[in-house]
Structures are given as C-alpha cells and as structure tokens.
Image 1 (cartoon, helix red, strand yellow):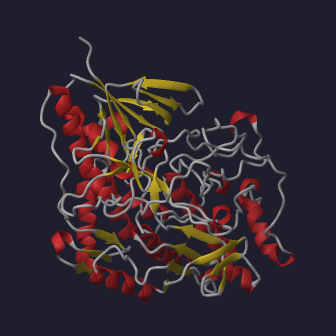
Image 2 (cartoon, rainbow, N blue to C red):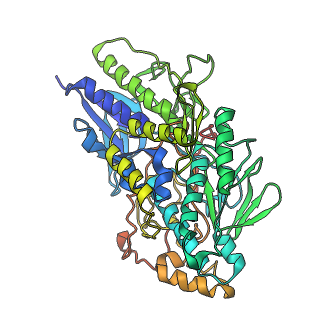
Image 3 (tube, one colour):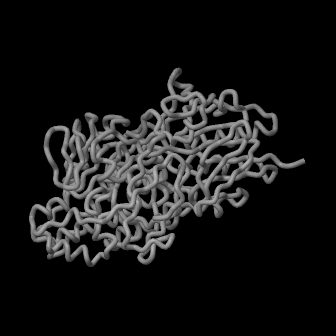
Length: 543
C-alpha cells in the first residue's frame, strides 16, 4: 500500500511549523513535500537588523533541507490548485512547469504587501517583505549618506539624508528605529560628514505608534524614537509620491530619495483563486483548520481566516505568532486525519509581544507585564533566540560583535532598485531580466533609459554615482534609482504578517555585475514593476 502524500504550499511560519510537526509525527509513514520559492525559512522579525547592518543575511535564513531532513523540498511557486484532481501546479525557478499530487494539502501561502491607491507609491517606494528588499535598503541608505557627503548642493544633501517610513506598525517602527542608529553611526566620528544630518520620518494615519499594542508599549516606543531624533507624525500619511519627494496629507512636501512602505499586508491571492468562501481575502476554515466541504484541505497562517474561539464571531489576526501556533495544530490534525484520530480546534493564549527598538532599547509585555529599556531589550533578544529554529549561536555572536566593533557600511550592489518593485507578489525573490512570466502578470515593457535625477548642480553626485557603476547610476524603468526605497509591513514573530508565499514567480536574485540572465547585457534596461490584476479585496494586516 502506497504511503499518503502530503503537500504543504509555503514555508513561512505556518508552513515550516506544519512540516516540522508532521515530520515528527509521521516518522516516515507519509511522503511530505514542501513547495516553496526559496530553500530557506526566513525569520522575518530580525529582518530590520539585516537592513541596518547588524546581522548578516544568512543569520535569519534557516535551511529547509538542513532542518527538515525527512521532508522533500520542491523549489517553485504555485500557479494554481485543482481541488477535484487533487494536484498543485507550479513553476520552478527556471520556468519549467510541474505538478504535485496530494492526499492532504496544507495551504500556508502567507501574505503580500498591502497596496493603497496613492499616486506614485508603486513607482517610487519599496516593500520590506523579503531578504532582497532588506539587502537593497542597506545598500541604498549607505549610498545616500555617501552621496550626500560628497554633494555641494545643500538641498540635494538634505534630500538624500531624509528617509521617510510610512506605517508605524511593527516593521515600520523597527525600521525607523534601527535606521536612525545606522545612519547616525555612518556620520559620527567622520570629520568629512559633520554637515550631513540624517533625518528619519515615521508617518501613520493612526493616532499613536504601534496602535495594535497596549498604550504603555506605544508610549515607550514613541519616546525612544523621539529622543533619537526620529520625526514621528501621527495622523499623517503620503498623499502623493514623486521622484523628488513625497507630498503629505497635511500639505507639506518633503524632499527625499527614500520612501519605505510599511502599511501592512494582505492575504496571498492564491487563496482567492480557489473559488471557495472567503473572509476579506482569507480562506474560511473551521476551528480544526480544515476547509469546509474539503476535508483533505487544510489552511493556516495569513491565508486562512481562523475562527477566534475566545472572541466569537471574530478571526485570529494575521500575525506570525498565530501562524507559528496554527502550523503546530495543522500538523497534528493532518496526521490525525490520516489515522482516524480526533481533530483538535485551534486555541491560543496571548503570550505578549516584543518590539526591538535597536541598541539596548525595546518595548515588551511578556505575559502581560509591560517592560521598557535594557530589561525589555534583553527579553526581546532572548525571545528571538528561543523562537528561532536555528542559527542561534551565529545570531548571538553577531549581537556580541556589534557591541565591540563598528558596523561595516559598504555597498555590495547585489540587489538593484528595479529588481525589488513594490508591486511584487514574490518579494522573497529579486526580479531578474528574462525570468519566466507569471500567471496574471503583464509582460514587462522595455523602455529606453533616460537620466531623470541628474541636474547641472549635481556634478559631485554624478561623479559619485559613476563610481558605483552603470547599473546604479542609471535609473531603471519603473523604479527611480535615487528614490523609491524599501518598505512593506512584514510578519513579526509578534504581530506582523506571514512571510513566505507561493505565487508563480521569477528566479532567485542573481544581480551581480556582468551579463544579466538570458543574455541581456547589463546596459539594457530592466523590467519595471508589474501591475497586478488579480488583487482581492484588501484585508487588514500588520498595521
């Protein structure tokens, strides 16, 4: 008799935890397959530390094959699911189609950036949902400070040193907090940068920072940010984004080259493509995480609307904390469904949340006890080390070295602006020329390059840009080099959103100098952002 086939779509917090639980319970009696676009699980709560140069990128990636030895890994992104035929169609990183048959399916596709109809944002902002975006942000911030230091024009210098973060949820708050420390360190003790004054702005339409949390934690975060010099503006957002800056809803125009979009997440559209009952973009499931009418299909994480049994009529929020716990329940219930056991409902207990504010500062309320300052910082880091399924010693070592040695503020140039557009259904994959076209995507338009940022007064900046190489000195279609910068509310291991997703997509980042994939020379323009046509109704995410 053949062994049952279990397919898990997605290896974010929910999918990874499901696979790990199933592997332990099945003990070789089932074929478990994980379909994921990358070969790692991304620990998103520490991504702002990667962008700020505190942690090396591989520290926050957990090898799937290394930690799930009894689970088969298939690299690819789901194109669609045939519920009647019990198959999952996918496209691998090289554009080859494939399919996986299943007896049990776990949909843990996660979430994508929540886009708002704000003019210019899609063209001039970036998300913060994946490793490529974090790497790009680190390079971009470093470059802007260096270009500002060499600029003769005071207005250009000020614009390059102004960094605007939209969204004061978990990710936006942490990006602004870590970013301020990162840029301050770049200009401190540097005699030629004394006139360079980095300025970080944090905007949100809410009336306070971290509106999801207790007001005491919100006040702590607000106080720390303001003491560091972050310009915190609540009740304010972006009305329009342009190549030269952003127009705020209060009428002020802020000259900037950096727009970080951290306004929340929405469920991955793969869930809506199934044609099953939905709740604000999420697939409706029973408390056991089974899909009604489809007992062989389970869903968890941000893609699932899981009933909150402690709040009748409500659903659990889209947070990594819930996704992680739901993955455990999903794994147990899938195993029980194969053996005829009883399925358990998902219940949760609020263990509290942590927000890393950089340095020794944090805001935390473990078990409902509000903490701030160095004590909260120690609790926050301890929580992350305990929650990470790997790399604990390496992460702790990086934290220790950061207290002893200065950070390396250098540009690696591995991720270009055009390769991490905000309008991407796969932020975990950097876009490359010649990648396979995905379902629902419009073909990228090749346009002639043109200089849009250079002015006669920018001679010093032009020279500095030429030093960085042609790929960065010339803006790409759909993403202005000197402007749009990362943002996009990721999933925290506290309230946030579920990371890894599985939409048909492109190849992993390959953006090193030299000929581009597919034989396209580097001097040719790269594809611009893809306009989504499959977006479901927005669902509330992190902020």
